[in-house]
Image (cartoon, rainbow, N blue to C red; front, side):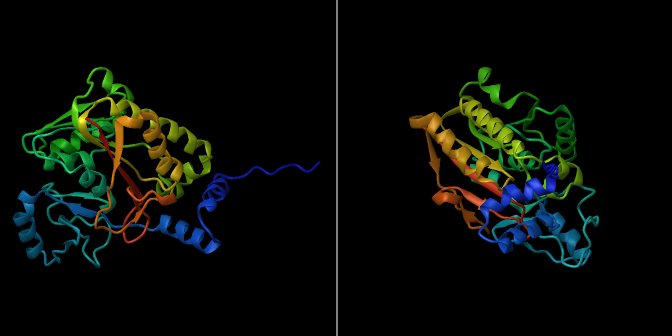
Length: 304
């Protein structure tokens, strides 16, 4: 009897993801794009624009913002990655991938709302939320104490005054705070294929079980956090995963579970990207291309 050879994590990864592509060429492009190293954009508060612009002018750097968001600078052409740019030491901007702006923009924050970022660490999206709130309040939560410590440091560097930091299990927040928040961001733990593909350690450990475990956790998070949302409030679900199991299928499961209590709101921003798979046109997908990392965004509303 022939002995079956043990498969590697890389082989398991490729075998799982090839089901989503019609040809080897498409699959090859997907893997190539996962390997691409994107320069971050530099998101800044509008109040820092003039000072930052003057610093870049003095350094003879081009001032070029994203076409679809005016408060995010593109990384200067021909400047090597990880270069210390003007304004970095003063914390006048925060580097992040442009895809990460989308979940925050989808919430359409009003200045006086109560907002929960349920899986907030390391803090880039939470920092953006804090800048959009005037008289409102941000609660930045993450279940990891180590990641919360890093987020506190970011908040301190950027002088965030309107945020309270928690470290609670997101799925059970509703037990102490039922129908508390106007808006909730659930940037959920996910497969993060780009991170996995570029890490020998995590790629070697990869199995399809990872996807199933993430899906279970995502549904649990969304179901619990929905109970912490005020009637009429809105909740954004986002991942940096490609697999539809953690995206469109999670959306379908939540809609089925909450039935007449919830509705899916169309989010099709004027940014690079595509509507969802399987005819789900109200959600938005970004693929790993155009200097953008993978991102999935769905917007829900709790019926009054």
